[in-house]
Image 1 (cartoon, one colour):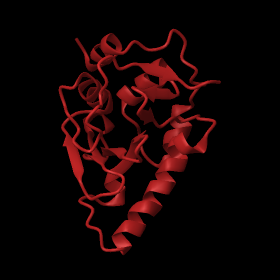
Image 2 (cartoon, one colour):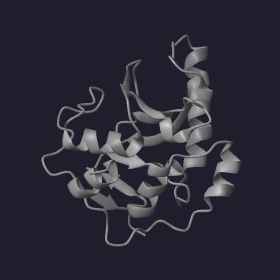
Image 3 (cartoon, one colour):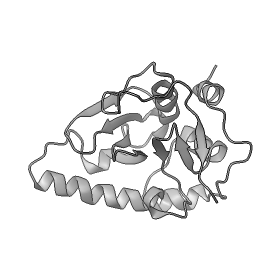
Image 4 (cartoon, one colour):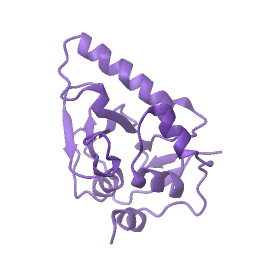
Length: 174
C-alpha cells in the first residue's frame, strides 16, 4: 500500500474535489520551487477542507487567502523574521521552510526543503503556534497526515484529543 492509499483508506476523499484547476508550472515559477507530487495528489483528490476538524492543507487556488499557499508563504516568512528579530532560535532558515498545513491552534506544518532541488525527498517539520517546539517527521506530507491521523505518529504539539476516534475530511462550503 502507498501512503496515498493509507490516507485514502483511513479518510476517504470527497466524491468530488472542489479544487479548481491548478497551473502547477506557473505556481512553481511564482514561488520559486517545485512542489512534491504527493501534495499535488492531495490537492487533486481532497481539495480545500479540513482534516479531523483541525488540519487545513494550504491550497494553490483557495478563495480565502488564509489558506492560499502563496499568501501563507509570504506571511510565514514575515513571521519567522519577526520571531528571529525577537531572539527566538529557529532551527531552519526561511529558505529551508515552506508552509504546507495550518492547525486550528495556529501551529504550522512545513516542508523542510532539503535537498532543495528534490521536492520528492523533502520531509516535514511542525512548529507550535505559541512556542519554540519543533517536531520532525521523516517523510512527506501525505505520509505525515496518514500517520498523524491514524495515531501512529503522535504529534506532541497537537491537542491530546487529536486525532479523534474517527477522523474525517470535510470539504469547505463552496
